[in-house]
Length: 167
Image (tube, rainbow, N blue to C red; front, top):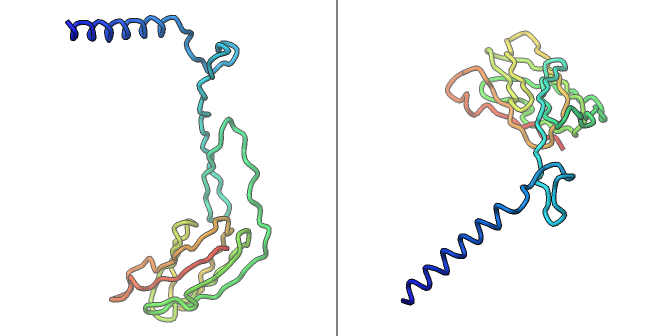
């Protein structure tokens, strides 16, 4: 008898819950249709993708409803570096700039063909011996980024790395 009573209470509770759910107004993102005792369901804005290309730098902006955030403008100065690539090192192996600086790197190989890559800045250039290669970009991301040789150049190729530090 006790089990039947408990079962009936559970069933009645479920039925009453279902009835009360059917009688309440649905939530709507439009606040004019929302009952005063309920909050509207937030609607996530759709993102629009836009690609910008400046020199050899390509960025993708995602922003809601076509409202573009203010662009990051070069506010610093132009920082110039000369980097020599040789088996199996870059000299200098660390360069430091500030966010907002324009960076100009002149690359020279003193022995064989090497590569110079910074994936976060979409840079991947071949460096041929006897020729200078120039890479320019805008340092708009803060952090420490590895640059490395992107052309296999021998037994210690994987150790041919350096660092770009953007403060």
